[in-house]
Length: 106
Image 1 (cartoon, one colour):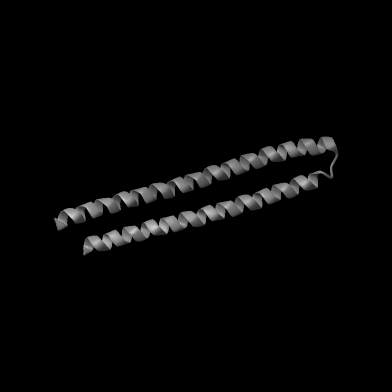
Image 2 (cartoon, rainbow, N blue to C red):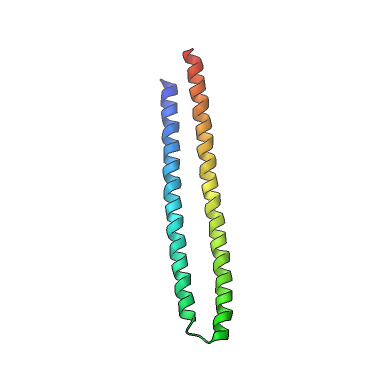
């Protein structure tokens, strides 16, 4: 019975991690969408400047935005990797418990 309880807790934790992962992914998508909208608005506003100033500023902003987005993507990728690693560890622990439970039953 204790093994069943442990197995249930691990299944619940895995489920919670998967839900957290889904929520985090959706949050990331929304943040990226908002950031892209901001960049697009900034780019549209810059079209009002002279061609040289616009090109210079566009280049600088694009590079800064790309660096910022790359940093955010790296941060989010690390979070996703952590969630995946935790999920794998929980799954392995659940499998070990199931195996031990099976051995105890036999």
